[in-house]
Image (cartoon, rainbow, N blue to C red; front, side):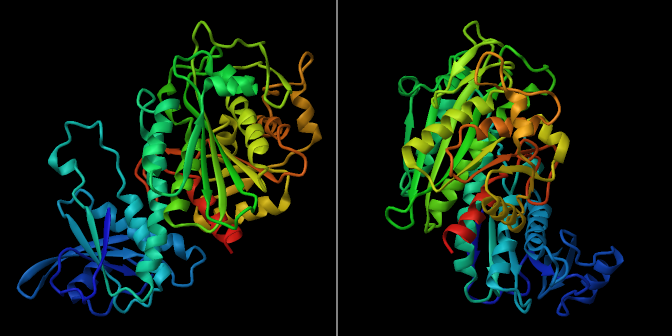
Length: 487
């Protein structure tokens, strides 16, 4: 969605025109019929509330939309402003209107506040209709442009930063939404290369032969049942001080997960196209950082595989040797994400000696049982890193909740014939998965594992997204870089 800043005041009969309204504070310059209509419909300016009216202005009929932004001093002011912008888009997206003007004149909103409204408006307008060929006209999105009037000084510059973030989130949503016959390891790499061309990100990949030479037996074991060849996607952004160790983001990219020989139930298996949501978030975050020229050194690494039950697929009971030299007894082939991550993390540490490693993965169904669809889980060996990521999640809206780690959990994945097994007992499933990954983190390296299984896909529309891919993960990584690497 295109955003255009106007240098002149908006004409009074512009249509449609939208106003962002604080709680219990209707604009005084509105026609009485609009105000009375709003009150009669119980519009009070609460976050995300919307009221629509039609009025006569200068001989023309104007469409007016009021969007609630909540209390000016509210705790979650940024999120409330995003919801106001999203409400405007949601109301007009398929209305037949191509343009809406949001008038900020006299609102007292800051440049950052305006950018938050616009971010919500743009994100709520994202849809992926590539494969829909029979939409009726009233189902097709019509809104393409948001015009901004009366914005304070600095708002356009603030929006440029948020527009970069929006592009990253949208790219993640695109990758997660695409079906598995379109996005698989090789095409994931190709899509990333095409989107990042000219951004300053150095993009490369390791193919199956290179990973075999490096001894990535765990990652390759997952991939061996598929005709789709695995890839290790590597993205380098060097926006910080020369020679300063980078922070590494590592994403699980299982582009489709049948469960392998430990096959999943048929019901809902189509959803497993989004089992690459961690890799999608890492890739979108890297794009966002490059678009806004982040002053930080960041590496993005994605282990990309497809997990299929072919005659060549690995079996429960197989033992694989990881790149680190540690051996794993594969008890359940559906616990494949940790096998991908362990080799990806080992390679990342050997290649870059990062200052910290943060991995993202749709790793366990147990995380959804624990947290539902409200938070991602976070596990960490470093209290400072964990605290910063939780704070970044709160600030950005990609909320995280910390879980414990410890020796009592770690011993649950000991194997009688190998160094470890890839699953523990049913209880504490998300924790034992994190304990598995921790065994591959170099001593002294700050590490955090984000299990985002319940967050990358939504069965119903949310505050700033339609049902489907949410883009979760991009915002928390971007905010972490803003607040703690660039500061």
